[in-house]
Image (tube, rainbow, N blue to C red; front, side):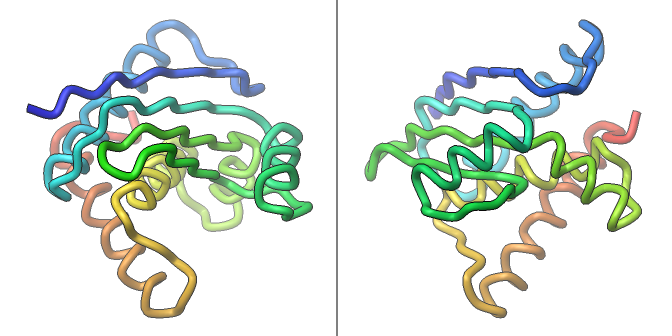
Length: 152
């Protein structure tokens, strides 16, 4: 059985009330467990950090030598069983939700799913990899929406 220790760190500017946060965490736990299960991956520790553009830009520069904001960074620390951090910039997610005309929470889930898919071995460096990644994101978003209404 795949027991995941899923930790949340939220230092984003988004104002979460307790109920919204509880629902969000529950949905993230569901989809993360489902992804690892369906992708046949073992995950022991996953830290999900929701932060802002400044912090993610600093991490991107420090660890990847990229001097810009991004929506998600994924750091995997173990080759056998997944131990990792997924760091999401809520600022960038919000900007992208406006840009792509999608609901903020849907975009947030897409980015979390994207980060988890990286942990499962998917990449998005080439055009073909991006197509595969987008199909997987859409598959898991649909699975999540079929289970629970993401936008509410």
